[in-house]
Image: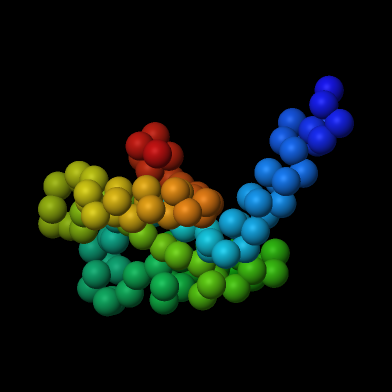
Length: 114
């Protein structure tokens, strides 16, 4: 093994430090499926911390993360549109990943797409 390789991950210390800095500078981007009719009727989204976001916000707070410092998008167009990927969101995801930002899929449909 090369002396600068981290045995636990196989990455050099420089690469690990660079990725750690990127994670600090680029907040986690959570990707949901799409707004529910109920969320639309209540005029709320992920940033409000209601409905599906409530459990996520509680989990983030439980591990010491501030939900307001995270990013949230929905992969699919909002109802009544058919269940199709929003190309603007795909562009946003690509920019975020190119900048080193972590992305977390929320749900099987989103995970399958990503």
